[in-house]
Structures are given as structure tokens and as C-alpha cells.
Amino acid sequence: MNKRKKYIFGNWKSNKDSVEVREWFKTFTSFYKQAKNLLTPDLEIVIFPSFTYLPLANTLIKEYQVPLKLGSQDISPFGKGAWTGEVAADQLSEWVNYVIIGHSERRNNFHEKDSLLQKKVEEALRGNLIPVYCIQDENTHIPSGVTIVAYEPVWAIGTGKTDSPENAGSVANSVKRNKNIKIVIYGGSVKPDNIDGFLQDKNIDGVLPGGASLDAKVFWELIKHVAGV
Ligand code: PGA
Image (cartoon, protein in one colour):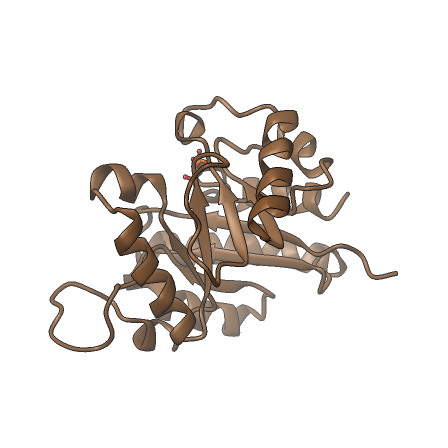
């Protein structure tokens, strides 16, 4: 029987400059080299740097030969064209496989609404990118075509407080059953000392750490937990 696929998505938010990106990869690679067999194909490890560092991250992934994929933290709701400041699906697809859509920091600080998020999902799918759609609870609207949902209770993001694995598992279960979503991950203050509870729930397929993904050593610790070591 195939092992269930597990996902670990590191959301770097607006952190790191090019020197720090290089350092992160150097450190990550030093851990990876000591335990290459940990990163099996049933582990999907994706980092989400700022737009500006996607090409650099892509170069470093190739240079260090680390099995990481890239995602972007946002996407334009429009295609290529006269949309100042936006980054379109066709531009992103050169670099990334995944895109986070509807993160609460964007909903709250940039007033992104369901209708806009719907267009972003459509653009992502048109560009063959996989949307990682963030929801606050089981009642958040999920646009059609979404296959991966990140359950992220707002009060748990960057606060050090996590939801209980039981409640997160029950939200994941509800979303899977009622909204026909295949993959649900949990985000909100995930750390090496609390990750196991979430991973043990059969409806939670992985995690979306923010703060804990910034330090390559801590991120590697999280990967070890996801790999069951
Ligand atoms: P956090 O962020 O792990 O720092 O709480 C999670 C997220 O916002 O994706």
C-alpha cells in the first residue's frame, strides 16, 4: 500500500533578503546531506518566498540539488497585461508549482473578498498552478477547482497559540466530506513541539508553518516529524 502523501509548506511571508535566502539554502542543504533518504517522494516540501526571490530560490534548488518545490504567496486575478504591481499566472508558472490564495493576512490587510479570490483561483488553474486555498473555518467559501485547503484560524497565526488537533481534525473532516476537498493542511503557530498532534489526525495531510519555516534548522526539524522520524 502506498504511504499517504504528506505536505509541508513553508510560508516565508515578507521575510528574508538575498543573503538570507542563500544562507537558508546552505543550512538546509547541510541537514539534507546528512539524511537524504528522509525526503521520500511521498513528502511534498514547498517553500513560498517573496516574488523577488523565486528565481534565486529556483537556482539554489538546482545548485544544491535539494528536493524542494516553490510556491508564490499570491497571484494576480488578471492575466498578463497592464496591471501595475501584479504578477500574473503565466509569469509565475516559470518558477512555481503552487500559489497561496486567500491568506487571512491578505483578506484582512488588503481587503480581499471572495469574488476576487475566485478570480485568483481561476487564474492559478489556467496557469496550471495548484492553489493552496486558505480558510478560517469550515464555513469559508471555497471556489470550485480547489483541491488543497489550508485551515488557518486567524487567531492562531503568528501568535504562538494553536488550534487543538481535535478541532483542526474536525474542520478538516467537515471540509473533506461537505466540500469534496481532497487535501487539508493545518496552519497557525506550527512548531516542532506541537506538530505531531496535527499529523496524527487522519484528516490532516500536512502543515503550513510561517515563522517556523524561516529558520532552516527548525524547518528541517518539522520535516523530520512529518517524515515520522
Ligand atoms: P505562523 O504562520 O506559523 O507564523 O503562525 C502561519 C501562516 O500564516 O501561514
